[in-house]
Length: 165
Image 1 (spheres, rainbow, N blue to C red):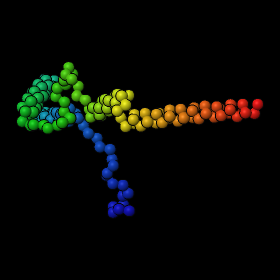
Image 2: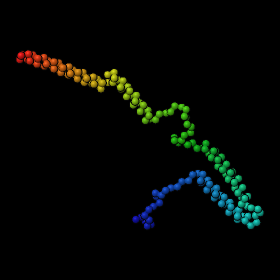
Image 3: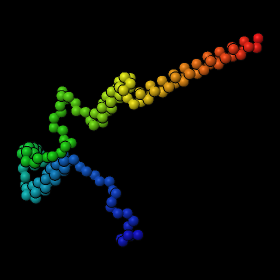
């Protein structure tokens, strides 16, 4: 058992990530809270009218200004960093010819090679075709020889039958 008496450590817990928008919202809420606390400390005694309504209108103007500043800073800084990300898609060229993947190119090459082989095979120019032709010729010769042997045997039988009569 590890020191401290605990069995499990901190590792393996699910991590929770937040989007940049959520972080911005949280920061704005914290700033707003801080402003409210400052205003309460400074003018909490004799403020005329409703300070919450005035504060909300001021906060909305300030938040719009902050968002504009954020966007301007972001646009300004985007050009400074050169991002080398091969997976980043900037423009899609849908009208142009589609580049084939390696597997697709290999598959097409295999089909073309099979077609070339079949043409050569049918023309009798491949080793397999030549071997098949030799086998077929040998089989025909064997059949002819058997037919010839059968003819000679049947002729001899006729002669032997005629002798017995």
